[in-house]
Amino acid sequence: MYFAPSVLADSADRPTGGLDCRLIRDPSPLPHFTASHLPATGSKASDSHSHPPTRTAAGSRMWSAAAAAARAVSVSVSPVPAPSLLSGRRGGPRGARGAVSVRSSLLDFVGGDLVRPDLGKWLDDVEKHKALAIYPPHEGGYEGRYLNRLRYQGYYFLDLSARGLGDPETTLTKVHPVCPPSLGRQPVARWYFPPEVDYRLSLLHPDAKGLVVWIMEAKVLSKAELQFLAMLPDIRPKVRVIAEVGNWRSFVWKPLKQIAGLEPNPDAEE
Image: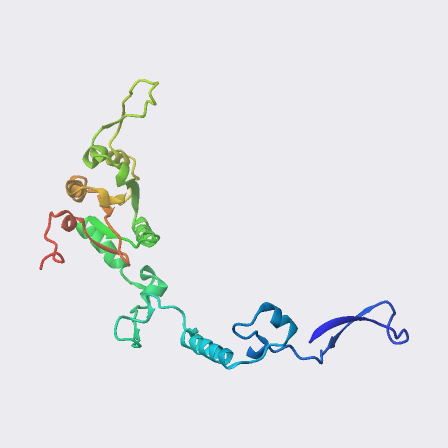
C-alpha cells in the first residue's frame, strides 16, 4: 500500500495541472522467504544462480535447530520499570517479590512550621533558657517564621557567621583587633573594633526588648565556644542567643547549655 501521484486529466471537474495523491493498493503481495529459497548446505555459488535451490533434509534440520535455539535464548521484556529504592525486587528466593513501605505524614507535604502550633512554646523557651540551640531543616526558610515572631516581640537582631567569628568572647564583649590583608605591598596594619554586642546594646531603642545574637553555622564551634555563648545572657541580661548547631527534618530546638554540657541532657542519658 503506497501513495502515488497522478496527473488530473478531467478538466471539467478539477483544475488541470494538479497532482492527486490517491491511495493505491498494490495487488502483488510482499515476497515471503522460506528455507526453500536459501541455497542448500554445501552447494556452490554458481549452482545457486543457474538452478533454483531445493529444500533438503539437512537444511530443514539446520533451520529447526536454529529456531529452537532462538526460542531458548529469547528474553521477554516486562512493562514494569526497573527496581528502585522504593519498590522492586528484594533479596530472597527466585521469583519472590517484596514491597518497601515508606511512612510519611501530613507534615512531610505541607511544611512542619506552618501546621505545628509551637510558636508560643518557642517564645516561652527563649525567655526561660535565654540561649537556644536550633536544628532547622537543610533546605532552610523555616527559621524565618520563628525569627519574625521574636521581632514582633520587640527584639533586635545581630546576625553573625561562626566561620568568621574568631574568638566569640573577644569579638562580642571586648575591643578586638582586625588585621586587613597587606597583599605583600602595604605594611601590616591592625585596626581595632568595638565589641559587637556592647556596641549594638548602646544603640538600642529605649523601648526595645533586647538583642538576639543569631549565630549561623555554629556547628563548627568548639565546646568551649558554645559554653561561652550559653553563658552570654548571664553576662549581658538583655541578650538572647540563638545558635544553629545542626539540621533536622523539622524545626526543633533545645537549651544551649544542655548541648554545651553545662546542664545534664535528658535525651543523652541512657
